Length: 114
Ligand code: TYC
Image 1: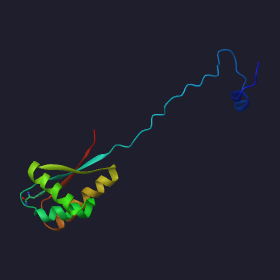
Image 2: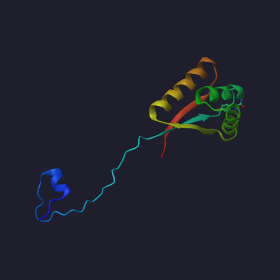
Image 3: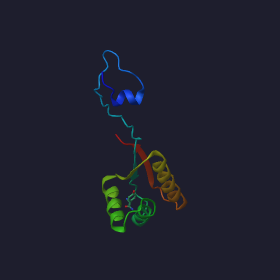
């Protein structure tokens, strides 16, 4: 009978049926769910205001902001970013508060990513 690394590390002698085979099990790492932040179209919010919102709260360039704003204007809705629950919630609150303070009906919501 030979002394092996397992025995030396565990101080446990192998008994019948135990082998040196190590079965690797892949740990199932749980990623937190992500949330899409959506901007909705309306007929009253000025285009420049939406562009400003996108630059200010979503850190996109002016040309990206114009592009996203026009997508919302034409299609009715667009995803403006994907974040953790807490960050998405903060973005939505910031946009809604800023729109309300400026008396625009702009709507921003969040939705769990599939
Ligand atoms: N439809 C608006 C207009 O014509 C512009 C607009 C774009 C409003 C995007 C909201 O999320 C929005 N003034």
